[in-house]
Image (cartoon, rainbow over all chains, first blue to last red; front, side, top):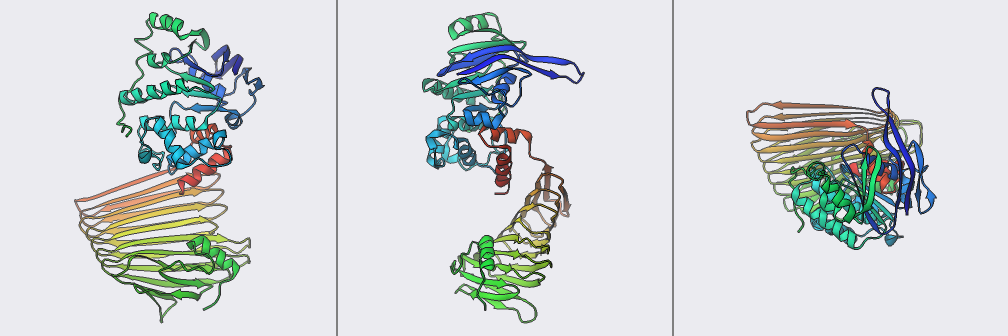
Length: 259
Length: 310
């Protein structure tokens, strides 16, 4: 179980004024549950995910993983304890191939203990995110890949880790409609075989629909938290769906499909 | 001919992959401390010693199809300066892989230097792949210096691939590569370089695209660590309807310095020439991404460098 206790995160702006991004957030996230954190832009969703991964350090408060206080641990230590993070903007690496990245990801996965991830096993992760493994396994993770392709590779690396807690920061950002359909299937499949805690930050109604529980964040605070059925009526009924919740798909990529 | 000692055998394996006492097939000419150590020729590749100066002539026949030729140089004598002139004569239609390179082990206090001057005379329709590895080791105060000079004359419809690698231990290098490319021929140059400590590396490429339909792709990827210095100069001259591209990609670390000087000279209205250069430190988000996979900061940095220079 992942627990956040009274998390506060302040930043100092260019005007030297202190700004509170996360304002006293307390949360308990259970195992084998699918959570979606949603809310308007600037509500602190991504910051919250970065605080859990250790990319940012809270001003005050504590983060506990299965009872262990991990607030003082860095990114690597948290990753080794079993937290994964799929970035909103996946990173490109000149020279590093998809297979290299998947092997690095699977290094701490207990299923592959004492042996490196084989090419066949790596291909299974690519197939799971709708990519033709044969075509992608030896590709460099560089600018020759489209945003949608990178996003799916990013998700495959997270799947290869097989960790207790998996965070996805706006997986729908920067991908086209076609890729989005695929992405939904990936999350639906993940939902069926869930192991551990999955947290997705998203504005998308179709992703909200997969959730067990939805956490609504506004101005750095938890506005409401509850079961999907109750929350969707509130959120969509509030008229937010037509704006912030559906305007995130950017039809710019030229993705190649799975084969 | 002389037997290689253990240090020389270790260098040989690093630069050419040849294990002690193992013959990799094809033709082979090993030079150790300025002397011929081993030579085998094949039916399709002949090697003869020059009589007017140190060096060899390598004769590659049209019947050579997919064969390899190894011409490594190893040095472990401190204070030695070795200059060698090697000429490659490649007949029309030949297909050959040439594995060259130099390994210097210097434990002494005097500088050790090897200057390999290589000239390629390539006939029509030939395919030449040239792989050159440079490596230095030893903890003496003497420097390990390598100054290779390469000259390529390619005929028509040739493919010439040059892979120049210098990963570790060379204190000072000035690499000069000139290419003169004929009609419908293609030149690919891939340089990979890492400098550390107070090392300096200067690479100068001059590529003349002289034949209609000729093309060149000259790319350098390098990592400069510590207080090292690199300078990459690449000049492509388009004298005919042709396509040329040159690129310098460098990762900068610590107090190192990297200079990229591309120069394009289009002397024909149908010459299409492009240059790109990107120098910078490792991006913070790259380190963060690999750390989220469980790598430490140092492991992440090494993985990024290894991938970049792969």
